[in-house]
Image (cartoon, rainbow, N blue to C red; front, top):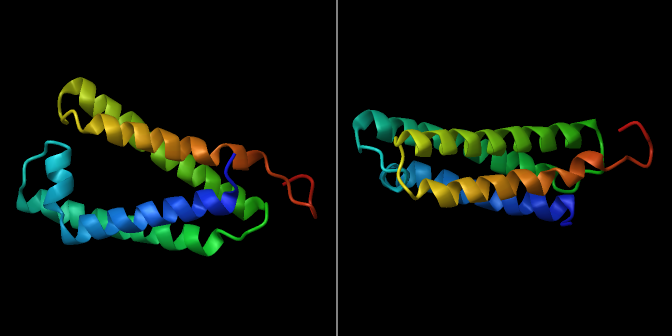
Length: 130
């Protein structure tokens, strides 16, 4: 099992890269998911860059945190976010509203969510209830 620091650093780097892609090349994600390139789609892609940047900053800043309630909350947020994205991607794929390139995205999202599951069980040395 990778350490929390390794998991948080990896996801921070991925989120930062995705943020830059969504901000600077918003047509690329639209193409990847087989969506029409419209002004509205480009606007939404650029907006998606900012939560990804925020996630990257949060994870990078928290990478050295000891087990705590805050670190557990971060892990839960990552699991819900990327697990939810995988579920939505699968639904879109089944409905035919996204292209086949959604499959690799789903796989990566599931791996990223699973990467943080073991860290939920980590206990603080100071507080065994954490």
